[in-house]
Structure formats: structure tokens, C-alpha cells
Image (tube, rainbow, N blue to C red; front, side, top):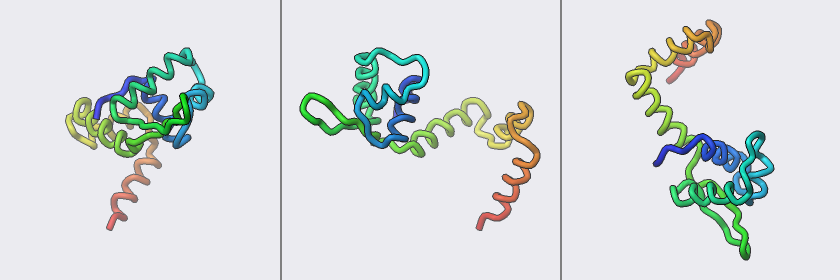
Length: 119
């Protein structure tokens, strides 16, 4: 599974949300920095070549849909990020977010409760 560019990830998030879409539907969902229609079409075809999307043909137009689940992509690249940036330590991940004040004490307590209540 190849890492996607930021724009490709944005397109995949749209396709995961819509479940299937024509290029014009993806274009409508892009909030900022909308590419030209043909550029977007090329990016979606690149996602197809990378094995992330497939399509149904309707004459000359295609309706695209994801064939890689969002959860599978997230798991692959979160694990890579944790390995590369946090020495494979989840403790280091949590510590990083605590130091950056991205996670509150209440959220940490909730995480502890979730861990303690696992069967």
C-alpha cells in the first residue's frame, strides 16, 4: 500500500464519505484549492492505478468508489508514523500529545478507564 499525497488523501476522504462518486461530485466536495477538473480526473485515475479506487463505467463517464477501507489505510500509516516518530512507543505518542496540550487530563483518565475495562 503506497503512501498518498495530501491531495490524494483528501480525495480518498471524500470517496470514503460519499462511497461512490463521479469526478464532478468529488469536485463539489473539495473545500479549498480546487484543482482543474482534468487535474482532479487524473488524480483519481492515479488512485485507481495505485489500487485505492475502482470504477463503474457509464458510457464515457466513470463512477469511482474506494476499494481500500479507511480503517486499513489509517492502521497502516498510523503504525508507520508511530514507528518512525515515536520509536514504536504508544507511551511516547500519548506523552507527546499531553506535552503539546492536545489531550486533557480528563481524556487521559477516560483512556485509562477504557484500557482497564477491556475484557
